[in-house]
Image (cartoon, rainbow, N blue to C red; front, side):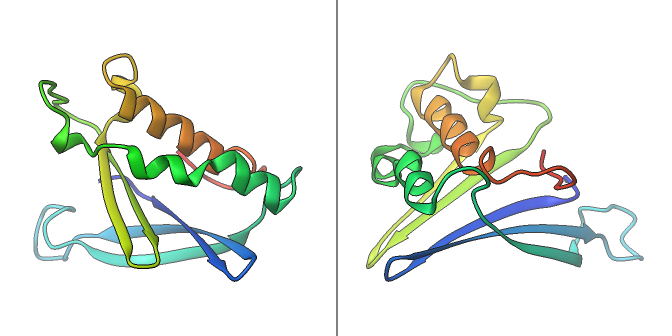
Length: 140
């Protein structure tokens, strides 16, 4: 529903880090009448990005990646509802060796006062984005 959709991919090979920033645009099939029926990828922009004012070591340390493994995805949070009529969902996938975790949060900024996992996700997203965004780079 949002164009462009933004994807960050952070990878490590041995001691070298790489961060890729993707922006991809979708369009519906011409005969569908609705832009989100049968979406197709229309175009993709990818940039390899680096932290602007800090080293990779400082950047990765600030991300506190190990702490993400203790977060709980929205559907597993007991006793709380995170319904909205309109908005977006943020997704986070983690993989280290054979360990894998998938997390999602609906409108995480809207629920930072209601749930610690949403709050932690918003802070993590800022730590990923703020050090790499530069003038001219789009990011919601």
